[in-house]
Image (cartoon, rainbow, N blue to C red; front, side, top):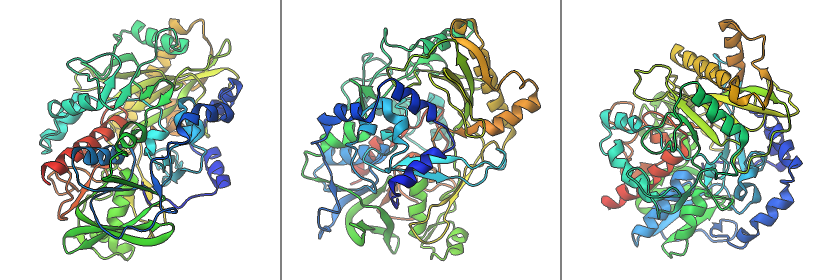
Length: 570
């Protein structure tokens, strides 16, 4: 994500207070537990002297080109850049629009809701969502080394094997589950030990909530789901995805395992890797049908750096299509509308936008004070099917140890918790387009939530399932009363109104530069941009369809495989 124009701290706080998902209860509960910024600062002392990148405010503009330029140091970009540097002697430059990740709100996993109020997080509003009562949904995105792996809830979920097999079936050779599984095993260090499905010894430490420290509400969630007939799942990254499970987390020893920490930092000892922060990309330099460099802001002034071999665009599902369009690569009619010359006509740029719908949410008042989570406040998930004939789960429910709702619902709870619902295989499709030809302008984001009956039915089913779990006997000693949807919401019409008010986002946008061989594909199965030499895209935007699980793990996979694909053809 590389075209951020920073807000002031006051503006960032205002954006935090007005965002769609209300986390005020998160912050107040954490403060009550003594999890203050002062405590977080003491935790982060070990990181304070380990700055491992160069701000463009402190170094000169490069006078020579680099073999590879990676745009973005997020989940995919940090992984791809580290691998390129470690697997070859080629020179690699990373251009990151944001700054350092040496911040307490990043390193301390319990403070992740608080991080959304910080200046390094940009808040993108969607258009009014026609099928969600014309509400505007807020999309926070992090601008720092590690990207959104700095501020997410640290869930590591590969998705379902059918996700990848369907990509391969649609023409993306080499992306079937059997082909990507070795990479997944190689990049992880799973605390449960190596197996047919899991790997150890990789750079990314992955853990589960430890027995004795698990949240009692999350334990009740799992038991209640089991009581309803859903077999417990010991590991949703193993043989099956469905069933209630303790989550996999990118968390180790009390520290968030962002991609900056796990991948990029270890590679910084190599002389062939250079990382620039405060370096937002403005456009790609295209000569003929080849990408020959990148224009960016170096200490606030325009600069250009040449590339000897390839540019890898890893700016994310919002910024990657934006950068392509600003560079003249995209739908001709969209570019013409904002006065940009079409250099390479690609109809799929900015199209096919997909996101997991999050229902926020089924909320309860507890009989007693709800304990504070030792982890990420969301320790138990369950994937399920609305129809047993489906090849993969399509809905999700999860326990959150705090109240969680949209501003429109504005739940009030002294001692609250929530069970949220999600649509994990959305059929709605949205778009990202340019507002203007000025790189400082945010793009126009229209996810088009709940625009299909399939998504509405799945959302309804998931929310009813969350409600059933919350009403179970396992919560009898915890539950005082249901606050949302509440006893008045009984008919389908009542529930539909509630769903349109509760519709929000998991913050998982994908697929705006989809991989494939059809006319809407932006990149081929080796991630090369169609019609442009020397340019690849490697981030969640290349997914033909969104994975069934949280998208951080697949984004890391894409970065890992991108480096291998690039070097295989070097």
